[in-house]
Structures are given as C-alpha cells and as structure tokens.
Length: 480
Image (cartoon, rainbow, N blue to C red; front, side):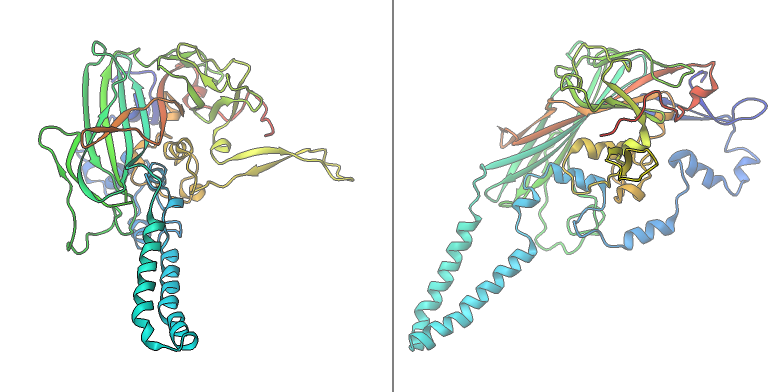
C-alpha cells in the first residue's frame, strides 16, 4: 500500500518499517518485515510486539486476574457498557425496590404479625383465642397492601431504547453501522415473541449491502446475571428461543412481571460515498482543521463536538441554540464565530476555567482558576457515556473514568484521532429500530440516538508537524 497519509511508527534508513493509517473507522498497520521468517520468528519478544501492534499496549495478566477477583462498586457498575445499559433499562433504578427496602418490610411484617398481635389479643382484648381471627386478618391485610403497592401505573409493555449510528467513509463507499439497545418490561409474566426492525437510512438504489441481527444483551459484570459470571445451578433456568426464519426475531422470550429483558439490534449497510456526509476537511501545516463537511441526515445534529489530534472543536459558551445544531445541508467550518477550539484532554477530563473575585491584597492579578470535574459513573446521558467509550485512552483510562471499558473496547478510537480521521459525535432525534411484541409495535417511552461520523481528513504531506496535531491553540480558553 502506497499512501502519503500514513504515520510512520518505526523508521529506518531504507524506509518505514512500521506505518499506520486510519481507514474508515478502523486502523491498518503495515509492517515491512516478514514476522514469520528468520531471524524475527526466533525473537523472544515477538509476542510482546504482537500485543503492541494489536492492542497498543502489552497485556498484563496479573492486572486482569486482580480485576477479576475484585468486587464491583456499591453502585453495581464497573464497566461503561453497564452504565450505558442502565440508560436504556425499561425499569429505571429509581422505580425498583432495593434489597434493603424489602428486608425492612419483612421486619415490619414480623413485628405486626408477632408482638403486636400478642399485645392486641392478650393485653388489650384479654382473649387469646381471638388470634384465630386476628392472625388471618393481619395476613390478608399484608397481602392486600403488598398487592396494592405493587400495582404499577405503567403501560402493559414499556420499552426504552438507546441508538448508536456510526458512519465511516473510505472514499469509494460509506459504511453505516447501527446499534440499538432496547429494554422491554411487561406487567405480566409470559412467553412472548420479540422482533426488532431496523430503519434503513439510505434508499434502495443507494444501498449496496445490508444485513441485520438481533441478540440478547447482558451486563458486563461479575454479579448475578452478568456476562462475566460463571453459570450456576440450572434449576428453573429459562431459555429464549430464536426463530429459524430470520435473525431479527425471538419466538419465545421469558418475561417476568415488572422485570426487564434487554436486546441488541445491529445492522450494517454499505452505501454510496455521499449518502450521509461529504467531507472536505484537511490539515495544513498550521495543525488546525480547514475545509468543510456537510451531513445529509433528515434531522440536525445537536450537542455536537468534533475531535481531532489534540484538539476539540465545539460551540462556544456564548453560542445560541442555533449554533449548537448542525443542520442538514449546512456546511460546517471551524471559522464560524461560534466555534471554540480547546485542548482535547482538558475537555475530556472536565477541566474548565471559573471566574472569581480576588481577595484584597492579592497581587497575582489572576481572576480565574482551573477546576476539574470528576466523571459521573451514575450519569444517564448517553452522549457523555459514548464520548468516554470512544476516547477512553485519551482521558487517561480508569484513572479518570474509574470504570473499565472491556465490553465496548472496540469502539475506542483515540488512536485514529492522531492519524487522518476526525470524529464528530452528537445527538439526533432519529430512531433507528422499532420493537414489536407479539406482532404489535410498541412505542418507546424514551428513545435517544447518538451519532458518530468518522470524517476523513487530508493531511499535508509536506509538513512534519501535521503527523500529530500540536497542543498550541489558536483560541484562548474561555471561562465557563
């Protein structure tokens, strides 16, 4: 492969030995040495080289074992994918009864059924034989109260969804990948048929190849029901059955009253190179994005940010609502007065400038201070979660996020930002999948869509500074 957009990782006097380039949403690493020939195949450190080439780091098995043996946090969330799954859960944590609440009710029930009944029939009424009447009445009242408290105002079927749209372009075509995390809850227990239909984004004439699938989705935890927990006793275990006529239908899904079942619908689609967006972005010697790009979705992209190199392009603090949206067919440029350029790492780690009134006698002359906001592992904004998943290594990993990123580690694209791909991430009111329960469509009570555009950037081949964007900014950081 011959390309002037490759970044040289290892060079030599005879030319590059290892070079890397981002194509679409992935990275291609080119090695000019035959790793299977002598003397390289006898190199004792060859396995470590494979680890660096494939994972960008060496795998430490001791760290993996210690992480597996440790306990999860008190919130029950130790992986970013679990936090994302909680956003789409049909029964939010606030609507569930905790174990402590259930045990407290058991203690109250024991106090009523035992000591209070004794005081009533022995001390007050002085007729112990009346316990044959009071005891059944107390049990019946407790059952009625429990049943009444369990009545939910929710609909017969409740669905919450989180969608993710990834669009990558390699010049000759655009690849569209949609993922929809759907959670279903019903007010009765039964076996039901669940089907999810993905919504195509391109017309029939534009689509070249399209495929979709539906799978059960679990949580990436070591707790009961988690993906990383070894299977226990099989007594009473229920099995979901998939139909043989298609890959997007489950014919027998066990639904427990006021419980929830999670599904993941995924589709791939190849389309013409200008189906979703047109990108004419470039990186000259200045290290700042030049050119424009235009998207062709039916709805605007809101709360957007663009990441490339060591910089982030986003709306300024004083920007109005119109500037915080990228309308369809409207070219985007960093030269717009509402676009702010700042340091990527500071933006990801929540670093901002806060104004304050200096105390009397302060001769420093400074009226601002730098404040860092910790990542909220209990947050429910899917945009913030996907931003951490996409730039996990750029944020400092578990040091800042304090959550692992194992299940969705393939969505981490920090390395591509330093090659020839920029990332636009934002929100769009664009449902990507429809869920059907027993052949009846169910309208979700909440649906959110995150879009990620992998925008190709043409880097200047004459500037060595363009290999990686510098940290020098062209705009002064604004206080927030």
